[in-house]
Length: 206
Image (cartoon, rainbow, N blue to C red; front, top):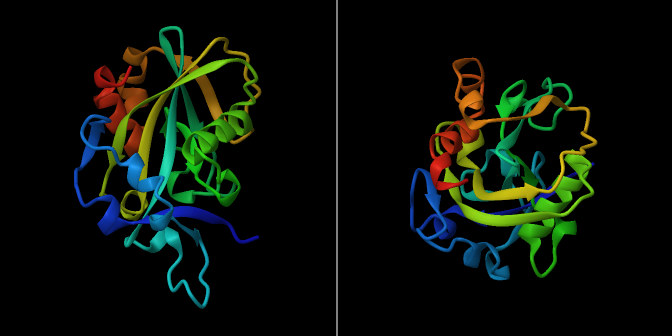
């Protein structure tokens, strides 16, 4: 089945360019992403007569990803991504991540499509049913490889009231850990690129 995701022209979204993590005070990129005249729903891994490249290979577009750091008391949620045969993004297989999130899809189209996307991911991936608070903290842009070059991070902290989760099977070795534990070499060196940058800036986020 063909999957589409929201994409914004790179030259428009990143006119005010940065690399790494910036707080939300740096620039309000949400006003661009929320502007319907800049919104395209493109095929992620396929092409069509109108779309010559899959979105995952087209650096002319940025796919906004609502990336939620799940916080419970003084710990944050961390998990290992499944093998490449299981997850939809084989380039991130077996990496550790501190973020829950995904592509903004056409069904997320609402008055607040970003938050709607994040809530959907929390419910689908974590199976969480309790109350939570969502706080927007900033943005992330990396350009190390093709995965980074086509994705733009919208960074949120999601504070949950309990740790009763019903996890999707592809979230392996999942648990809540303290930041010092995540910073330990055995975990930090196995983090995906985005998670490494966020851990490096965690004092600006949590």
